[in-house]
Image (cartoon, rainbow, N blue to C red; front, side, top):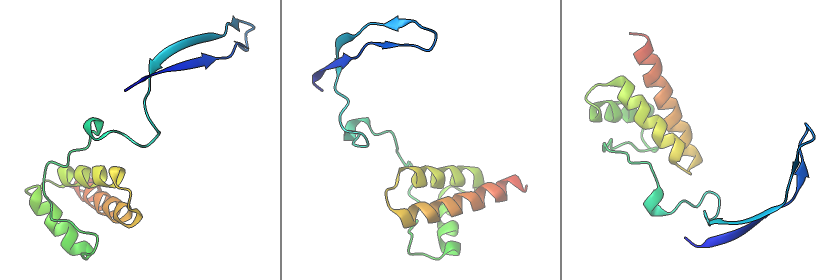
Length: 108
């Protein structure tokens, strides 16, 4: 990305230390929330055949089967999905399913 010039105003800290004004160049990081495709970190790894249109029982069955019965891995995958999705309904259902698997794992 391009270089941008940052101008910082002088200020005085609480303890009385004076910080001088500075100007420096740094890398432009783009708009907030607009991470370039090459820098996005989420990779789902396992195809769960999970859909928000399914019933809770079916969603959980598909997700658990995809992770070979590992409740903790299933919960983590669904929590990661909830964290990166922009769809409100998907986030809610993925979070509730993740909580279900975490509580089921904790109860063992």
